[in-house]
Image: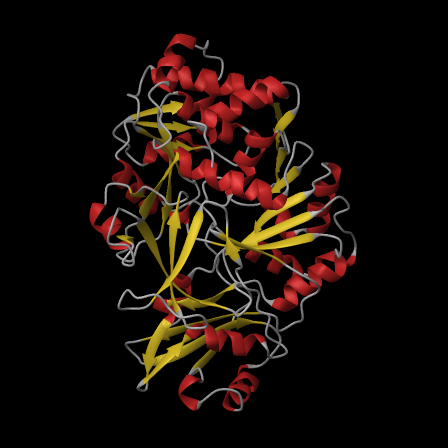
Length: 502
């Protein structure tokens, strides 16, 4: 159990031990722990003079080493940060602003015009203008004294069912418990070098930011365009001696689909953990065959549980049709499978995955109604307050005690009088030669099942395949081939863009 009050304790310890070691590097710049710390103190001093403690600060800076310094600078000011991506449509950014209601927005110069066009009512502070602010140590000391283990650290946005994004508030303590648990499983120490893939405003980036601050490791922020250029990507990984990747499954899937290991390979890679979606067995097999000495770890978990709440260390080479379990809970997490009536599912029986423990978020910012719907009292415990987060995902425990993921509750549809799991249709499609990626959706208005896919198979072939594979009521009524799937900034498929084909 983590006993530190805030991530600032970790940063102070790392600076004392590794002042001249690089902590963050991008294609243009590198920051040592000492230089990074000085930036956080300058940024924190400026913000602490402008923003009351315990208030949110919007941060819209780019994919560079100064963004983590902005995040920690906000924390130095005794506040918490809400990151935004300047490439997101303005309407979405305004929705996020409306949720957070911040008094201050910290931007880099490149994002300033975007921020200005949003008609933000508070003060916009340009990062480059305050990096040389003389630190006010007394002001910083008072600001840090306002922090507790339960103070918010950040607000990360997820999609909302009503079309309004939900801001998930994560505490200092929850983040620190999660990072310590991951550190132990991945066996991270000061020699580790992470290659960062995730957008810095996305939840997966917390590993790339806070594992180095906790352990003295380093993170290389990889240029976004390199992920479609494997040769350049691997050159970057090798030039920086990257040893560990904590990526979205979509990133690994893309490189497998591109047959990326044909010309070159990462030479120093030892660990790969992935999360965010189900990684097809054939794609993981491709990675294993080309990088057989790498340790692969499958993670599962929602933003509401900090980042990931379970893990599975892959044992042996998988087959093309392998469906990985999501494993066991990380330290400080508890997983319960509950049925609709609130009772616990029996071993081998499906139930909704509900997460408890120290890693739970504080709730949805400014939205007590949604918080109360999703974060519930454990129905099995009538005696004291014990919150669980209802993930909306189905799971089942295997005989060996490992947890399996069985799709989302909202991926269950009723079609022609039958309840259908869309994930089951996708699973069947992935077994067909000529299908690379796929996504099944249901148009309730037209009562039609859709299958979107990429690959060489012809739609007619797929239709015939399904007739011999699944019951007729589960066969997609329309099959749509795409050149590529539309993606959200976090690498997941953009389902709204796909529904435009309905």
